[in-house]
Image (cartoon, rainbow, N blue to C red; front, side):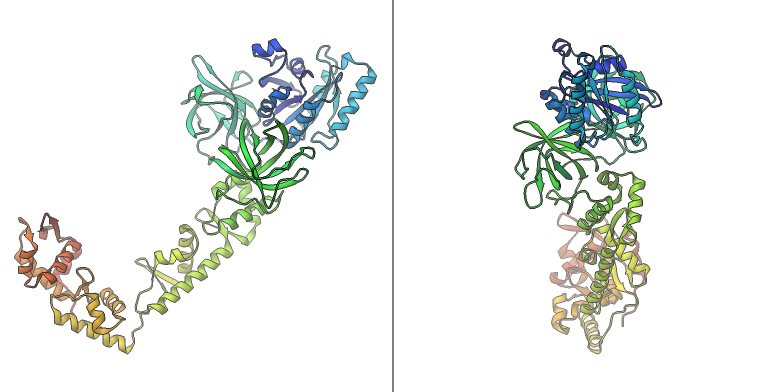
Length: 633
């Protein structure tokens, strides 16, 4: 668990942390000289019944709010610090608003410097604090007067923190590992070391991780928690990780470590629900530039809502357009600050960190349930299905919870090849398939069916879903699939009396032409427009053979021509087209198609202007063809 301080500058946050933990979190010379916190400070705090809690001490000066945000993003429990001699100040209010934007609801208020004020001023300060807590994230939090100098109230503060800590749910140590980096340094003999709060999962020595930006692979050399070597760092702990495979200069605050085997990706388009503070004083249009803070990342952004600006005082579904891609997960909370003048104006929660399109629309309504968001996600990618493996990151749920959510949808959803789609969509695609097959049979009654690839392109779904539709129809006995051709179950080409007469005419024509193979166009002129379909039927039945480009012979004539060619050629030499023409005993016009047929069968290969023949190493099908051929009608 992580405890984070918040409050105005010089209200005693660092002194209070030192009094509670014995650790001075101001470590920089500049912090010592100026007496203010500039960078994040860290210390362990032991609470009875809770264990060791990591404390993040944040700066209170308005110039360092961005640093405060980097520390506040990972905390579970807030310690709001208000000096009794000054009461509520501007950064008190801003920090409290930030805690609310980050969804931090557990906390304690320490009324510091209580030893330097009288009872009346202490009561006034207490009332001042109670006033700002009303309606805030920490409404109802205990207010404990303390003195870091005398120790008065520290025991009561520890007890209040212990009670508040008991209300904080544990982070998920069995989830995917993620840790935003807030410090980077080099240790002699160890190399690059990064620190941060583990947001999810666990890490241990020799784990393989990736570091964003860039997704570069790194290896864990060692893990420390609170200055001591540890076997494992888990969610909710402050951790220092020694890394192999990356130099210090390649990293900076805003880097994020994630598990190498998890599906983390960086995106610059996201969906979110945004709420501007009531007193933000601005509305956001699609052109308004803001700064978005998520974890330790700060990035420029634009906020785009449906149909107009984002107004203060209510939650609005939006599209976030970021200046650079960041790693995020559904459910992550962020803070928005205006660019000029610089001020915290609101925050939000990511509802989809990895939408499929760059110009994705915001969700239909704010604060939708996970099931509603899942429905919208599936509907917008019906044609290809929603990748189930990506749901934990997009919805911000564990895989088991995603599976339960899909089950909650009942018959509405179906999972095919790892993709989630609407059952109605698959049913519609199946109906489209059957209609397309029927239309193919009606248009080409002599064909075996429709090409599978053509049908897949007509279904309006991704290839994997299309295959699932086809196989479901096969399993149901509606269609058959053979040689990439789809037909209705039991389909047979239908020949009319005219078709049979045309077939006889084609065979008579081919027999009369011998080795002078006619073209398909000539066959069309001879028997009519149905000739192409009839020739395909004859070819399927083995009654004709295609040799050159759309030229056909009977199998017997083709076999005899090849036997003549084999008798007249040797493998040891190359033959010109003229020599082959003489062997065939036909003109060049008809010999060239036969030569092309030899090339297609693997009998011959081109060498310069001639052909080499390979009679001793013929393909098995060709050898069998030369040995025997079916009788012609």
